[in-house]
Amino acid sequence: WDDRNRGLVTVQFYDICVPAADSTVIYGGSQDNGTARYLGSGEWEVRPRGDGGVCLCDPGEPRHMYGEYELGGHFVSFDGLQTWSLITTGLAEPSRFVAPTDMDPQDPMRLFTATSSALYRTVNGGDSWLRVSDANDIISLSVSPVTRARVWALERNTGIVRMSADG
Image (cartoon, rainbow, N blue to C red):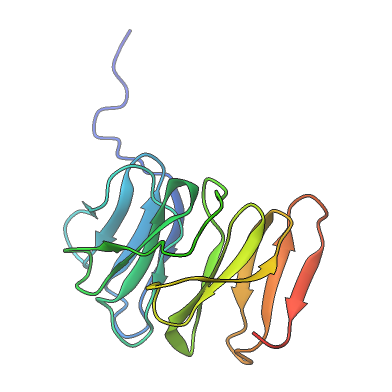
């Protein structure tokens, strides 16, 4: 057998985000390779190891980002992934392998995430999460970039898209 994968570099990203304030910075949550960042030149730098998940960037501050690791573990970084802190206080149930999560584009301290049985919201950047609704295995979340009170959730088992008009 001949080795045919020399020089081949591959990564399976679950999600990437690019801060609006600096498009040379990219963060990505990847399969088996944690959460990585790219600073516009050179190679991707892997930070938290394991499995990365959803990445969310503060539109106005490129060094402020949120990420996750398998089964709904969430973290925040304020220094471009030099350091990070876990933000899981109040999340009681297990989550999907890659937890659906979204950030309010108008308020980077307001996020939503889902576990296997509930929808959660934080208004303080993840210092604490509040259960806001029962949920039926949500697989996708989206906060409207136009009307911040509007939040959509897609249920896996039923295929139903639910919408909240009051945040």
